[in-house]
Length: 315
Figure 1 (cartoon, helix red, strand yellow):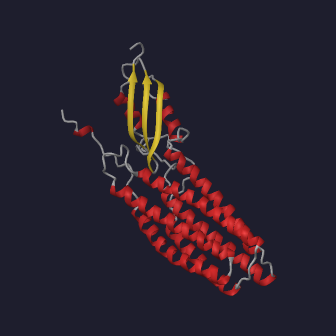
Figure 2 (cartoon, helix red, strand yellow):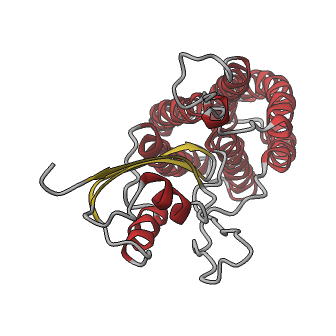
Figure 3 (spheres, one colour):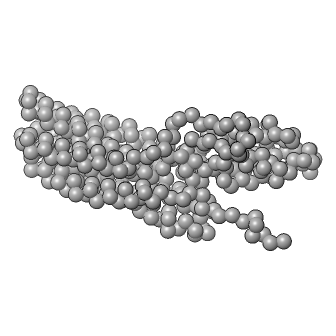
């Protein structure tokens, strides 16, 4: 008997070519705007504008990492050294980007506090114009990098499985794309804060608003970075045994036609909204075979790699 019929591909994620292309476009545009903002910040003595420029420089690096992660995942997709494919390279890119975001927030905070105690004259008109241009660039990049998937809607399956299709909404988010999106969104937020601070300084003489807005921007960026770190770390550490699909596996065994008890269960993500599963069962029912139980789980389409072991009591 040939084993070919039982072999399958371990490429569990098809990649995201559109996201990769848009991330590359956003990188080029961000590099150009970064150079303009850093030069303008020094020239016009705007801490908010300078902070935004340095902030954008780290985002350019992060976007570069995202592009590299997409390219590496695509290049090594069929490399047999990767037991469950290369999708986690993209998640690793998102995790690294989140660490960079925290570094950016620390730099923004340091420079803003320094400028708060050592203010310098600001050329408001030029700085406002450049910050507005930066905001426009960031919004364009955010539009390119938006994700059409919405990962936070309830995860549900049809209880009537007659059509054999399951509806899984959990875990479909592209974390590498999300990291790039958060970077440009953070840039847009700091650009907006810079504009508000500069307007306040120009119209009301509140020059202190410039460094204060830098501090506010640092806090906002930190919050986004921590959220992305938690989300990507869960995937990298396989800490997803609280995912809805895990309970669905338990329910499939409990309500199935054969009597079996779960002795061991491992579920982890191997792609966007796709999971691998190792299931160890104990059953005295002769009908409880690995093939039969795999058939029970097949209705859950997010389970793309299932291994079932059935142990007999007393053996």
